[in-house]
Image 1 (cartoon, rainbow, N blue to C red):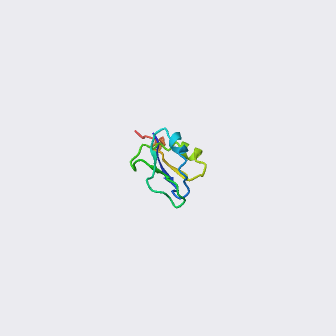
Image 2: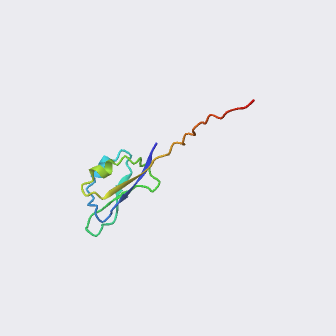
Image 3: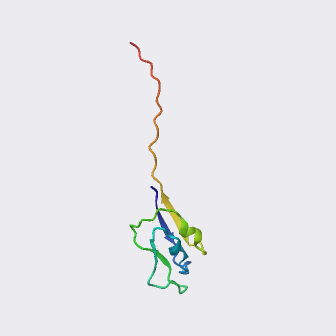
Length: 88
């Protein structure tokens, strides 16, 4: 399963809470401190969160202040089989 992480631009976030409502993993909450614009910006609940990288938060953010990064496990590369002549 893919895992993800989000980065929130704290200065652009207006604390509208739409991202928190959209998040199926419930990993977004809001800061205790105001940003320079006077809003409580969205933050991650825990740095070791359960974000899956679904990007629903970024899609619904009206200010485009959420960037999603996905870590997708790579499948092992297939090894091509060569036909090797055998001399008996």
